[in-house]
Image (cartoon, rainbow, N blue to C red):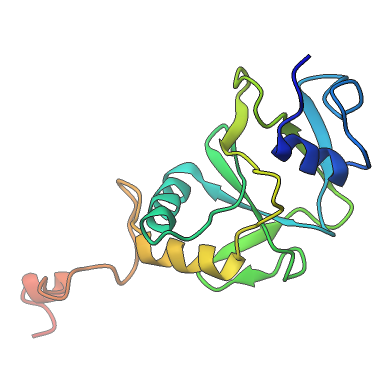
Length: 169
């Protein structure tokens, strides 16, 4: 029998298994385990394109990202629980997942056959991303999505539409 990875043991302890083993862990009932949010960590969900840019930025600056769960078109960062649920972090990201809610997690170290997998698996250290560092990375890498119009986003060298049309001069 294969042993549980350190990351799986860490999540299992958070789920209430004080001594997880290969025969006693939260993934025995299915591929996803329900892990409580709130006391040990909070959740920040970021659209995948912005999250992937932020992760690359953090990696380039050699900053730890902590665990990152990939869910469909969203990346879920596990962060230090420094703010209460629903409070904005500077940079416009929002903490989600209140104390007492749960996050369905695949087993770290398992095969990624689901639409939900670990983009950055927990390593068992319990090290989490600082939400302020995540906000800084998102600000540093922010770019509008194709086709998205953002007020005030014209380049400084480009005149206003009214100036080009001869209006307001």
